[in-house]
Image 1 (cartoon, rainbow, N blue to C red):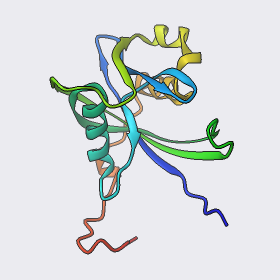
Image 2 (image 1 turned 180 degrees about the vertical axis):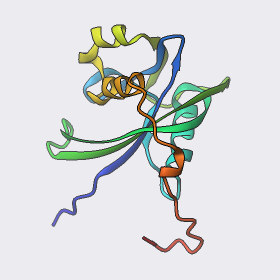
Image 3 (image 1 turned 120 degrees about the vertical axis):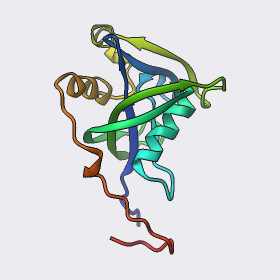
Image 4 (image 1 turned 90 degrees about the vertical axis):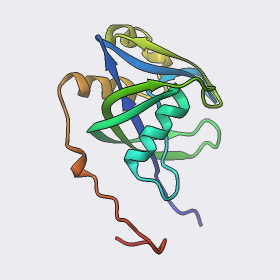
Length: 160
């Protein structure tokens, strides 16, 4: 019996002078654009995860300052043929220091694009959420980071 379990992901929506930071990456569906994003690791907070993913995929420090939104999407996996549910937590914040380090496996490069440039290539987006998150950012949607609570479990037991 299969157990349904959504995949929890984080994404960083970073704007500079009207352009947004994206990564160009190799996927099972070909080369796609996405925000610096990835999966939540075990024993990691959402805020730590988005900072780590930005460092790994864009080679920059990132300090989240607000929760942009929480998104749920379902896709049919081209690899397994099964439906996969994603829960995406998107953050906005401050881009920090650049690091001289290789980008994560599968990341080809970073690129800055305007919303109009993103709109013109949306068939190459990793998901429809890439543009949706930018639109929510431009609409001024923000929630304080205090909306997110991480239980400081010391024992490693699951606590609700």
